[in-house]
Amino acid sequence: MTVPSLGTHVQAPRRRQWRLPTRRGRERAVLRARSLNLASAGTAVPLTMAENDPMLLRLAVEDLCWHMAVDDLDRRRPRRGDRAERDAWLAEQAHLEDERRRLAAMLTETISAL
Image 1 (cartoon, rainbow, N blue to C red):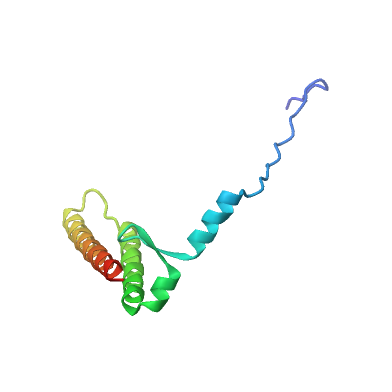
Image 2 (spheres, rainbow, N blue to C red):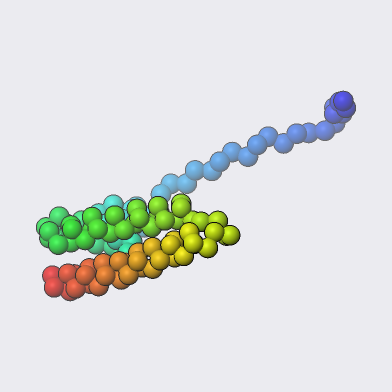
């Protein structure tokens, strides 16, 4: 065991800097808080539109179910050597991609009708 000499100086850990949120950052946060992100279509919809339109609310729920299914599929990714399981996994992935396209088309149609 070695003893450090008295001349060595150990640096203290750096303190974390806190920054005040900027006006633009607060504005973006407010806009994000007032909108509903639909991952299947890659867009955000204002909450007031989703609250007032039953079709948009239904699509938001379907988008949430789709997103949960994608997360579940990612967790169940098969090992490299298991071909049968991999083929089933790829078929389910293709099905979810078709579902995403359908949801995106329905969302585009619904928003354009408003």
